[in-house]
Image 1 (spheres, rainbow, N blue to C red):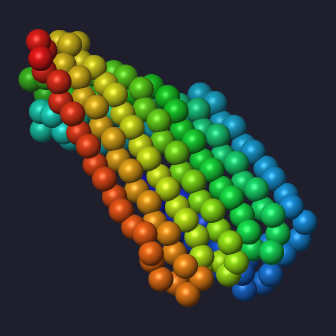
Image 2: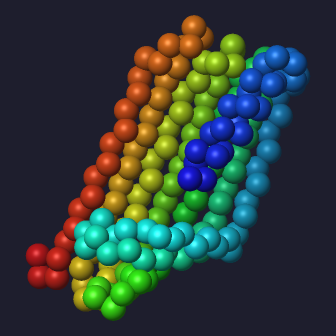
Length: 164
């Protein structure tokens, strides 16, 4: 959800910058690091048990933007942290673990040409020893003519039960 909002804002910014020529200055770079962030996500379905619950995230966000001028920019947003999954019912145990997400965008002139990559990984272990490994990968490449030449999305979910 946050990734889609970020992509929408960034796409609008790129379009506006291209129209106004705002990116045509000297190279600029900025980094914003936000520590001790938290977010609650609900409802979230455990992909292994099908049970609905709430995820509490505690993370660090590192956002870096390099504007080389002439509509050439590189953006990276990295989130890493800890999570706790609490099911709504008492039929499965609470799970905790870590997650990492990276959003990388490279845009070259004209502004509609870009390459975007977004991997996301979660590893969480429940109190009973069972484990969930969740990994997604999204990538898209668009040419100056606006044609998408590469686009794929992959999802891998691994559910490891107690004892196997």
